[in-house]
Image (cartoon, rainbow, N blue to C red; front, side, top):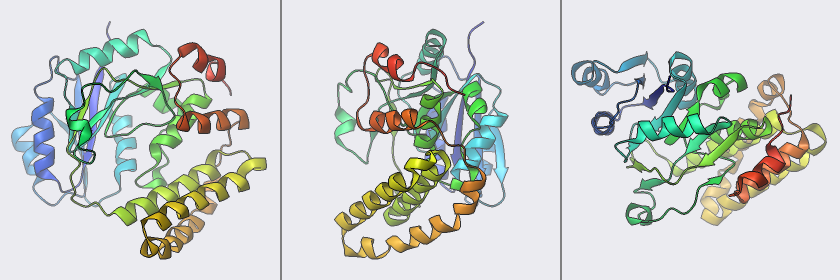
Length: 305
C-alpha cells in the first residue's frame, strides 16, 4: 500500500493568497490524500472562502491568532497521512505530479525525515527564471513554506517548540532529526512557487524573532560545556547582522535580548541537550551541505538515544 500524503498550511488574514494557493493545489494529479488549513485568527473572509469554495478542505479555526508554530503542531497532530507537506498560504508546488513524486521519494528513502524543495520566489527574482537548482544535498535546515515531513518522525521528536510562536522552528527540528540519524535533504527535482506576500511582514521584527528563537534553541539543545560559547557566538553574529543593516537596527537589538531572557526559565525546563559531536556536526552541515550519502552516513548514520 502506498504512503499517504497530505498538505498542511496556516493562514492569517491573507484570503486572496490562500485562494490562489488552494486553486493551485486543486490542479495536482494525483490529489493529496488530505488538505488541512488552520485559519489563525482570521477576520478577512477566509472562513467564508473555505466553506463556500473548498468544502473538502479540513479547517482548524483559531478565534485569536496563536502563531504559525502552534498551528503547524496542531495540523501535524490532526493529519492522518504518513507524510505531510508544509506550505505557507502564498506557496504551492509547481509540478502537477508533485504528490506522486513525494510519495515515491519517502518510500524509497526510509531514513528521510524532511525533504525541502527549491522555491521560485519574488523575494529573490533570479529564482523565477532559474533553469537549474543544482544537485540535491543533505542540509541542516529547511523552510516550512515548502517541505515534506515524515509524520512518524515529527511525532517521535516532539514537533516544534510551541513557545517559539514563529521562526527558527525548522533548524531546531532539523538539528534533532540529524542528531537522531534522520535525513534532511534538499530535493531539487521538484519546485515550489512562493509569492512571498509582503503583508504582515516586518523585517526588524522577523530578525528579532529569529534571533531570539535561535538563542532559545541553543539553550534547549546545546550541551552544558559548550553552551555559553555557542550562545555568545549566536548573539554576536545576530548583532553583527543588525549592525550591517544600520545603527537603527543595532539600537533595537536589546529588545530581543530582553525577550530571550524572559524565556530562559521555560527553555531550561524543556531542555534536552544533544551530544556535542552531533551538535557540532549539524552546525557544520548548516554551513556546508553534504552531497554524498556515504559521507552523511559516516557522520550521522548511527542513531543516538
